[in-house]
Amino acid sequence: MPIIRIASPLLTGLLVALLLTLAPAFAQDSPNTPPAGDWLGVLATPSGELRLLVTATEQADGSFRGQLESLDQAPGQKIPMSEFAIDAETMRFSIAAMGASYNGVWNDQTECYEGEFSQGMSFPLAFARPAAVEVTVIEGMDGVWEGLLVRGETELAFTLNVETGEDGTQVTLDSVTQAAYDIPVSDFTREGDSIGFRVPAASVTYRGALNTEGDTLTGQWTRPGFPEAEVSFQRTAEIVTGPNRPQEPVGPFPYSVEDVRFDNPEAAGVTLAGTLTIPAGDGPFPAAILISGSGPQDRDETVWTHRPFAVLADHLTRHGIVVLRYDDRGFAESTGDFASSTSMDFASDTEAALAWLRGRPEIDTSAIGLIGHSEGGLIAPVVAADNDAVAFLVLLAGPGTTGEQIILDQSLAAARAGGRSEEDLDVLAQLIPQITGTVSAAADEAEARTALTALLTDARLALLGAAPAQRELLISQNVRAWHRNFLRHDPADFLPRVDQPVLALNGSLDLQVLPDANLAGLEAGLSGNPDTTVVELEGLNHMFQRAQTGTIAEYAEIEETFAPHALELISDWIAERFVD
Image (tube, rainbow, N blue to C red; front, side, top):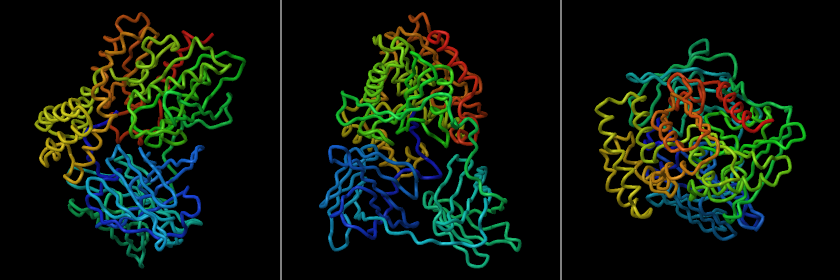
């Protein structure tokens, strides 16, 4: 579920555009060859260069699908485009969720698409084929370097990962406290005992010196707008390949695994790609369709280096239940436009998954259910209401209150967990409903944008933890169609029409869909349903991990992906009703 506050020590969005001076990239190719593939733009900012990578993928009908990646801010996170076109003459795209667009024309002399990138303001930007990367080797620095930044009452733990291989010396930073991993480090240099590097995603510069033994690095951590801080890194012996995930499913599996694709006939251009896992034996088997939470999600609902849907699918299939999980439309291997879609569009995709699954011979068509997490728990009742094709629902942190109420509750819970004063909380309790009410009442995006621009003064942005430069990003996030639809959604419009068995679970430490109000809302909405089980699971967070605080920063620190007793509760509940 979304959180209205956007302040973060590490920027993962693209909205540093207000501070950017944009420069062209260098080319090696020409669009006289097919324009599919990667196109790189280099943005020269006051704190260093940022690279934007556009990936053009040709579709079966000859059109192209585009995705954008900010290599220095959020590597590996593909941002789906709401519109994309490329040919030998032009490249143009828009990303509705970010209020960003680009329009460029091919220049034969420079071998680049040259044009303007717009996001609140317009800047020149050129995209060209990526040039070859020069291999750089830094001697004597390989290892994991653990450090701690202390600034007032704030403590941030870091690990600097340095590893030399065929591609030269590669360096990344893990912000352990903030649960952000594999953050790119650039300009890593060594001159004698002097070491320097940059972290473009956070506008950080570091300059330090090694001790005589070469195992301690001490220097100054500099970030614009913050006091300079001394940070010392201590080297450990081995490279850490990543956080331990002991529940990660590893083959060979005692069931069959099949990559599948199916179309949504109600949405032109939407083909959903997923994975179907089928128990051993003859069947027919009961089945479950997994519906992911908000934001672009792959079929495993990969988040914070966890793959909860992979773990859940593995568990259920081992217990005799077929599981279908799929990439969200417009993300990973699924086609379509994610950015302009709403929860109702994703409900249409779930209906397409249901229709497709009913045609599989291994499936007991009288025992197909929906398992929705977070926003998926909003979508599942929409699909199930008055629908005899749905046999059961499992709602994992599913909403039981309106979208406006969820935003208010989760924002205050996050602010409280972050140490905000009671005075600040009282102010936020007044401000957040103003924001959500303004957006919800607007007739369209343009009206919402105008009203929100007037409302979000610098002082109010500061209360939300946002800088003036982030105003446009905050507005763009809150006025898009998905968000306006979410704010207006009321589960009470659908829950009384759900007459299938329902299992609703929530963790007591969930700070995104708070258990008290939402479980009460589900109970009220399902009060006429004779087979409803509502359970608050003590000590579990929004991801159904056993947790200490429930904060988002804790998700990646926890090795567990999905609490085993929660998995057992789900499989046992389904088995009692549908497994012979």
